[in-house]
Every structure is written in structure tokens, then in C-alpha cells.
Length: 515
Image 1 (cartoon, rainbow, N blue to C red):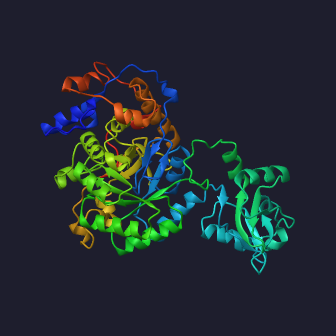
Image 2 (cartoon, helix red, strand yellow):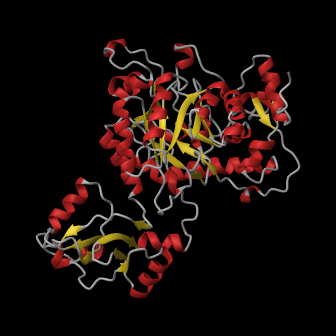
Image 3 (cartoon, one colour):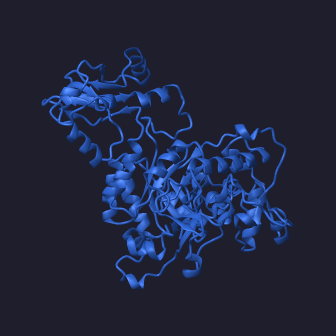
């Protein structure tokens, strides 16, 4: 019986491919252009990461130990996307990485770090170092816990004796506001009084919050309009967890650190341990979005959606550093996987994240056209200066380390990677690697790479007449390429192609972290 939902051109296209058991990669197709009134510069690239969490650009950095820690996650959120902190860390260290992102900006700090009036400058600076605190504004409290002053960066700058106490260097006649003061009212007070820190107190004089000028001013003036911020004006960040009792404790620490979403991460998510963990996470933390992956079949995505996943991550065997297809024999070409999964969860109103196979900015356009809401990148970001890992010089070229999460190095060093590939407890000489260790060109700032990638996406949206991401997801039309078609739609019949300096990372192969 024919599926009545097959009304869009792309539905018919993929139905025919599926009938012939053909799996398609991004390189096998091109999007068809059409009449357009869309200016690429104004195309709306806002989308969703998960059921309740938005993105201002449809790009997420992968939960890999050579891609995303707090530096990458900060810049991703500032650019409008989001980073997923990897789990090859102790739970405490991973939670600290999340806290470094969440504490980087704050509109209203609901529980500000306070210092005692008897603490010395040395003790306060040691506390900042131990807790990795990037800020220098603190309410000062008396032994009863009531506000008596404020310390700001200027207080530290003009302090000549590190043995001085907070009570000696603080601003005693500080400006404060009542509990419940709005952001706009706080902005007006801080402008009028010319103060950079505004503590909030209750009727008993206890500190219940604080506004900081460096965060309040750009939010009110909308100079951070593209930042991906939570309801409190803090940068958004996600973090990966695995399965089992220990991972429930990890999730608890991450949530206490302020994480916006949990990514339940496995090489194959359509299996009983993942469903059990998903249920336990949703029962324990019903207000936290849980993204689950990875899968590549539509029925797998549908089962996860029915089980309560707030987004499904799609991609198996398609990463540049992935050996899963060769070692384990399973996986699916990514374009077909994305379409199939997006089609099957259409009635559940949850996003699809295309995790893998992105080599060019045009592949992002194709992934969204096939039904993805966002893409997760590994290799294209691994060469950026914000990525963890080592820079090495080879024949004069600056290269950055980039390994698959199933690589020999990752399996040796990380229990999380062993768990991801069902090899925990094995002797180190018995691991079966499903990823490789590699080097990629050092490519500079994440901001520059994202500018090129989003620019290419916008261009594709303009050519297809797609004013926003949902229009591209709904109306995209595909053409299957022959081998000659693949050749013709790339630079060809040239003596030499000079490197594209604006985006050197686009001149390579593969992306992502499935391996």
C-alpha cells in the first residue's frame, strides 16, 4: 500500500532510492535550484538543537576529546551554535568544563559567589584559581551572611597588600537592589549610579542574586543578539554521558553545573542499555532535554522518539576518522540515514542532528534539506585553535591532532570510549579499534570557519528559495548524480587548483566523530 505521506518531491525521490536499496551520501546528490525571492544575507538560520533548546545557527561541535571542551563550547555559543562537552573526563572535571561555559556570561547570577569580609586578597585569588572563576566581582558578607560591601576588579587592581582583607578593600557604601529587580530596572540603576556590580538582597539583607554590568549592558542593548543564551543570559552548553549507575551520577553533577542538555551518547543507540538510561534520566530529571544517538535507521529513530528522546542524533560509520563500517560492517550513507530518520519522527516534533559526513558547507545545506535541524561537526572544527589537543609541525605545516572516539589512543585512555564501543573491562592489548588517529591542518579561529560554513548554507537557501530552515527542510528537491555529474559539479579540467585560504578546512575529507 502506497504511503499517503509521500507528497513532497524529496519523499518520492528517496522512496525510489529505498526501493532499489540504494544508500546516498552527500556527494551523490545536488539540490535543485528554483525561483527565489530570498536574499541569502537575510535567510533565517535559526533552528532547534532539541525539543526545548534553540540554536541561532544550525551547527553543533562534537563531543570529542580533540574537539569540544570549554573554549570551543564558549565560542560555539557566542556564534549562535552550541558545543557538547566530551565525557573522556572524570565527572567532576566534565562538570567543571560546563561551569566554565555557564559562568562566562550571566544576566542575573542567582547564586553569586560571596566572600567573607575577613578573607584576605590572597585567599580570594586562590579560591578563584581553584574554582576556575573567570570573574572578579564578589558580594562581601559579614559573619551572619548579610551584605556589607562589594569587591570588583578595580578593588583588586588598586590593592597594594595581598594580606588585606575583603572588608578593607571593598566598596562599603555599595549600591544594591531588592530581590526580584528586573534586568531593565537593574540596567537603569547601574547606569544612574555608575556601578558595575549590583547585588540583590532580601528583606533580611541576605544576598539572593547579582547583576554584573559587563553582562547586563550588551543583553539590554542587544549587542549579543546572535549569542545562544539561556533564560538567565548565560551561554548554552550540552554534555555527553553514557549508560549505567556511574553515568547517572555524572548527569547529576552536570545538571548541578547548569548544563542545558544531556547527550546520551553511544555508537549504536537502538539497544536496551540506552533505552534504560533514557528512561532513568527522564524520570530523574524531567525538565532536562536528553538527546540520544547514534542511529542510522528510521525505525530506530522512531523507537527513540517514542521512548521520550528530545532529539535524535543520526550517523553511523560516516565520520572521517571512523572505521566502524570496515571493522563492524554496519552503518549507512549519511544522506539516506538523515532523510529516513527525519521522515519517521516527523509526527513527534523533535529535531534530528546530522552527525557525520560533512565535508563542505554545501553538505550542511543538503543535510538540512534531507530533514536535519542541525549538523554536528568534528573534523572541520578539530583544526581550530579553540580545540583541545596538540599542535605539531610536519614539513613546515602546522597540524592539529584529531582522533576517533574508537581510536586505539582513545580506547587506551578512556573508560568512556571503551563503554561507547562495548569494550569496557577488556585488556588493553585486546581492544578492537573502530577509529583512527590522525592530524588535520590548523585552521585558525572557530569564528572564521563558522562564518564560511554559514555563508555557504545561506547561499544554498537563497538558490532554493528557502527563507528559513523549516522551508529548506520541507521543500528541498534532490538530483541524483552520475559519476560524470560528480566530476562536473566540482572544479575540473584545470592544471592546478590553488588552495582556498578563506576556508582551508574545506579542502579535506570527512568530518565528525562517529568513529
